[in-house]
Image (tube, rainbow over all chains, first blue to last red; front, top):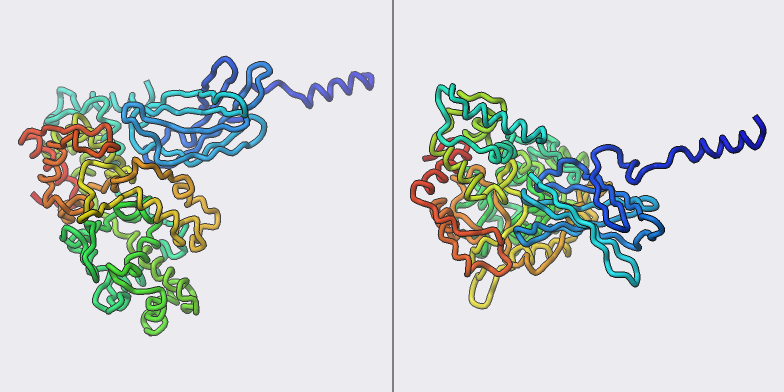
Length: 135
Length: 383
């Protein structure tokens, strides 16, 4: 093997197979997508117990050249009950496009609308949401 | 179909089977089964509060029990914790509103299963049991003491000093506040052990969980019908959820919050503000949990206008001993409580009250069934 071939092999090995969005979250993930983003998230624990705090790990993957948002907010509402959570979750980045939301609690069983709001300076907030049946 | 739903369907089929020797009076629906099972098992695992280094320590529990009955912790030596939290009354006092050194404005909550609670008091102004235990010691309307008096009392009495040493591994120090907080932590360690016994409901719930039709059929027919209402049309389980029959949060159910001319009880709205100002909350310097993971609820709690007039969703276990009811003690009996929900005037409900609340329009028979169900949540049947 020539030196150049060995170098190419090493580069290929180091790069490894391309990871799909949210692969680092392991199994049990859920997906939300729109034209610009794919969001993969994992509830911890799953299923979410009623009346207990939980957290969410999530990965946000832009489609094409869309930049990552400057800030991501997580919230949830009970549309039928017309109220949200009694807690404001915090979101902390854990690497490029990787985040953890903490401090969520669904205090009633029923249908909750979980939302991720993507905010960037000079752009309208973008909302990705999904219904969850709890309890 | 999820595994849980398959289990529920299998249990429904089992309970509705034609071969039942003693068929259940009110078979539970496929939707009701997981809701029923979520109210157990009971009792819960013993409490170990990471914010309290005295938690679950036998010496501290014994010391806390003695302190709980000690009137010397009050300003004038006339009141102990047990004066209002009377063991024979489910650790409540039987009065509409508490009476300490001065009259209070809220009903005394019982202490059964208090160690299971995330928020303490009707407004959740404390996020831990030791801070909640310190509050009445210092409140001028209750025991009216001070950090200095509590610490002086412990240091000055050989028995209390010895108990402190056994509970905390050292003599009470010179810092009044530290000693008083430790007294509160011993009181909390004792109260964590106040767990209500198993009930007829728990026997039924567990029988259903293991598919024991014969044992399940021993649950009184009226209680079965009441349970079906609780889980079904009444939707009571939405707030009274989990093994303690409370989601641990707060609701506005249309009970007036006026407490006198021009005065209102802000409930949870005021409680959150007191919590956030408190030096004794779980974000403060007295939390023994170095990781502060126990402070997650406090760190994230949200203060919004809708919390005005909300009060704690109380547990429904052992209610028979804790009359009267509601945050202001305005309803003398459980029958009156059910009438409140039955005749709820939705137009008068606070604008930010629970949107899901509707008047239940209970028939007399339904009221009797719900009373039978609530009675099955007592350790010993009372009716």
